[in-house]
Picture 1: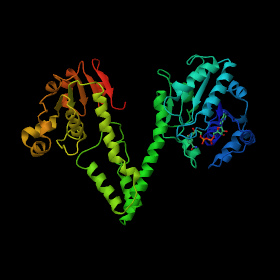
Picture 2: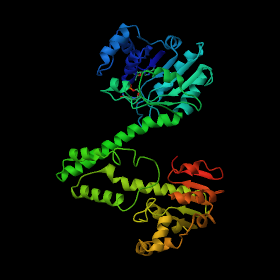
Picture 3: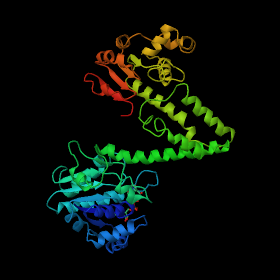
Picture 4: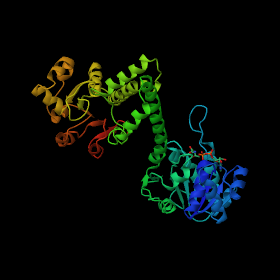
Length: 438
Ligand SMILES: NC(=O)c1ccc[n+]([C@@H]2O[C@H](COP(=O)([O-])OP(=O)(O)OC[C@H]3O[C@@H](n4cnc5c(N)ncnc54)[C@H](O)[C@@H]3O)[C@@H](O)[C@H]2O)c1
């Protein structure tokens, strides 16, 4: 394919070299004359493993050229990749000035071109940038409507400086944000020699994945560094402890606990977080990141409370009281906290949890229930139907599989606040569905 790459910084130069290596004809475009001159002469404007030979070879084979002429670059290519900088503004938000400038320039160049053109955003931009910013600008400047000789994709770049050529050649996946019904065939063709899964998602999701990936990396580093310092102060070889932690690919380095949902609780997590923090306090060690874990967890309960009470004083049914499904363990359950807050504010509440129900009847955990939550026990009912009989809002924490048919049948007409992401609820035709953060 014929591809123009706008912005020949770290991402752009690697794209130029690697796309040319894949056999495409590539034109690098930049506003910085010295970068254009260097690239045109077969020299890389950036320092990176393998890039010098890649660029020299591509220019030598006539597969890569460089220019500062936007109209010329757009007219001679089918696809324009955008990899201009998106630095931080003074207030921390992202500065999209270079993105706006390059999108407008590409749009104007498309206006004077016949034939289709696709524009691909490789720069890291916040969710919503495609729909709220880039596409309106592109349509205005090009005089075209998206889908008619004009396509726009978001295709975030996940490479790491230092190993970027290797990362380009073997990415974990190729992710493309596209409008519904568009299979992104242009980009499938661009990346066809690369053996990696190809995912097409809505624009906003694709834009988000790059953002949350980097935030997640920062979360992992902050955790490892703070926890490492605490461990070291107790004479522990923290690198060895973390090496072993990472060996658990079931719970630790895995997708476990990595789904947005409701707050954590139970007999272990809150207790052990508190205990670990007390180790830091005893050594006067600052651990600002870890110290925010429990307050952060509380904000999730607050968010659920707000989502429920936003609808006014409607009677509520709560499904799930134990800290998770399949247990009667109520210790530090976030559902208990939520329920207490609701009844404390005078809301009409019914609670159903099959496992707590059994514990009440069979005597298991009965003492805890009678001693700690007698005020909630009075609100507990013995079937989903009894919970839904009077309620108008149903709050779904967790539901045992055997209760799901009765739940789904009884929900009609309810406002449903889904705290856990139950697929069957989303598809329910007769409810007003609200996910906690989806
Ligand atoms: N550096 C990385 O490791 C990395 C990895 C993944 C994603 N990203 C993202 O990719 C984007 C680019 O990052 P980078 O590090 O390559 O940036 P960079 O600052 O190295 O390069 C940006 C280039 O864009 C050029 N430019 C600015 N305005 C232009 C215009 N109107 N027309 C043409 N060129 C223009 C600049 O002159 C510069 O050469 C950013 O959004 C970044 O967040 C970077």
